[in-house]
Image 1 (cartoon, rainbow, N blue to C red):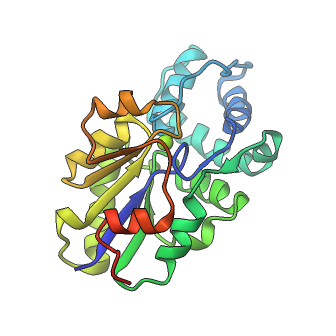
Image 2: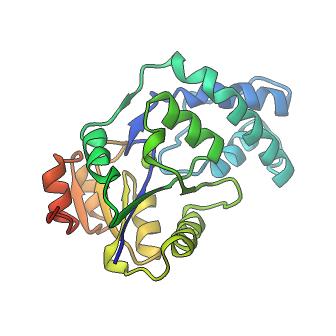
Length: 228
Ligand SMILES: [Mg+2]
């Protein structure tokens, strides 16, 4: 049966150095009509829809769905130009593992992310990871991460048919990722390369907690793909 890997983006595959804040501030000033300082906004583990709602509230605007949609659309438009404004990078071990998974026919990697689709695509293409992912579940329509995880599960069932929970893995860097993985019965690989320590992640009882992604042979062995 196919092994399914659902990947979070920020803090798991890459870090943008919070460059997205610039795009969000520009989008917010257009929707709200005044400048909003978002430099202290905590975004780790939050979906873009949740971040957009919080941004509107910080600007004194009621977070109605139409305003959230408009803010996210502008944010997606502005993000490609804002990514070069900060020094980000692909996180340790990511490219090596994705290279290893890429040619396997018994494994599918998908995105399971709080990013909107346009934001996910902008980040992955800027950091050269876009060729590894053709499908994903995003926050464009789903408000919270658990409903994004449920979307991801439906998507993958449409692609490959029945799946075995013990062959589904969610790889993420926050307690939100752990909870959403647990909610769909997946095994969660918690990686402490975002804002949370190994100890903080362990408290949420993921299936495997690591300080960073290991070399591919160790990763493959752990997820039961050591034979090829
Ligand atoms: Mg993350």
